[in-house]
Amino acid sequence: MDFSFKAHNAHTGTFHLKGNLIGETDGINITESFMEQLEQGIRNVILDLSELQHINSSGLGVFITLLTKARKVGGEVMLAGPSDYIQNLLMITKLNTIFHIHGSEAEALSSLST
Image 1 (cartoon, rainbow, N blue to C red):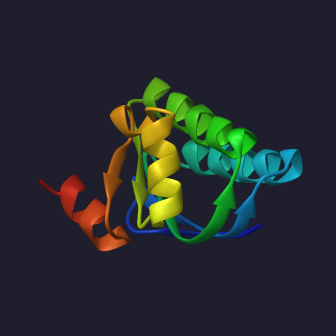
Image 2: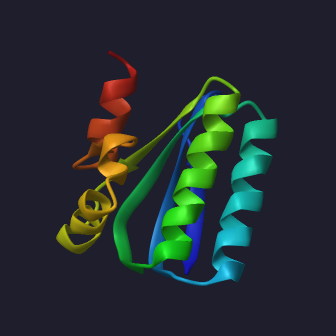
């Protein structure tokens, strides 16, 4: 899996995820990068899933870990642009009840300003 981070302001940024989030190494890499952003003051994170093709239970566990870490510092993690496959997986696992899910990164950003 490839990922990149883009800060929108001092407290908000987006991780763009691309490929498959299915391995332990991927989870460790994104969690470490996420923690670095929290240390720099980022509190609200959008996970742009528009190019994420596949995720397994380990990947879903990473999402929960990131959400927990963000909420501990008063922040939030939002999911943006999930495919039908990923959205269905979130519904089956009931994770759609704990994450704010938006159709796009722009929608997620807009929800933060309201």
